[in-house]
Length: 150
Image (cartoon, rainbow, N blue to C red):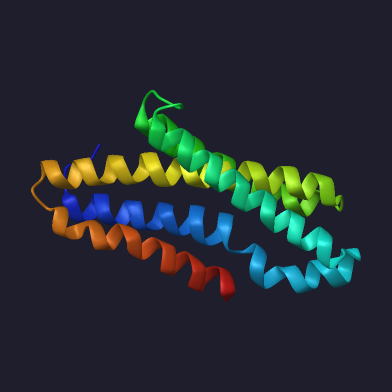
């Protein structure tokens, strides 16, 4: 565990870029290709996206209300791993129903990462009296979105 605040902030940025940028937002630029290649309907595409939003909402509520408790580091790492796994698994199916399940689970994972990862990073920055570096962490969202659009 590092106590160097800038390293904590940059590590958070990279993690957030992966989870939010790739896990949540990579779907948008690839959606037209998925619709064409897999003959998805607009309704299918909308339901797949809605499943992700629902997972994110429920994950955020579960994390913020204490329904999901325990070690923040555990949930942060779980969020990263599950987000990566569900994103990769999208390539292994053509079923809209499996896409919905994967996107729901990915949304849940990214929300739990956001709740617990933010708390972990902010606590470490505050302990080092460098809360001013919290903007670096949130730069991960934009970095990830930009990276997923490339």
